[in-house]
Image (cartoon, rainbow, N blue to C red; front, side):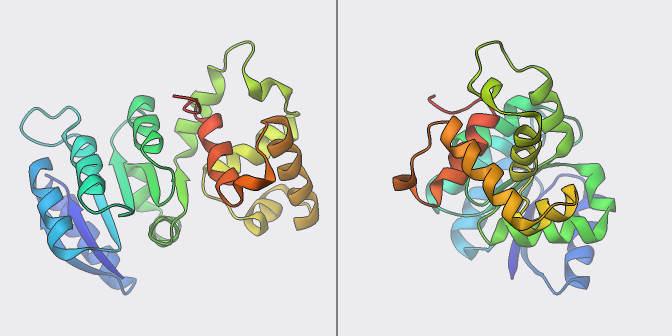
Length: 217
């Protein structure tokens, strides 16, 4: 597995390189600003790009814009965005550009090494991993009339875990239920959100998009 890292903090950047190396993941390039990411992704075609949201020169959203440009240059490149704070707009902008192979995590999650490496591997494999704190904030501001209002509390809980990138097996373990029960909840979620079987595997992605408030535009 090959990774490109865009992070202006030398300490964090080198820490990520070491942490990934210990897990058998090779860092093929590192850059210290947003503009350096797209050409690095284009040159190395990594399995994953890890990107800080705020980088020079303005320390606003260079990383996010660079990530979106990198995916435009090399479509399908998995992206993991790291942020110091919960910034919902960045999460939804990233997911809105295509929810397969994307992640948004707070930087503090890096210290939870096993979980962080698991997230890295899931995103590189095409999964979606969204920080639980972001999900909590998004859930807290659901509007009246939202399609998610039709879901039961348990179905919303299952959908939240789906948005975190959980598989059916991991969701079952978290909720202490059978995989069959999880599958039933997911089928109900698809039905209540109007996601038809013809949409195939994309239904899971569309359900997460709906949860994040991006479906339909």
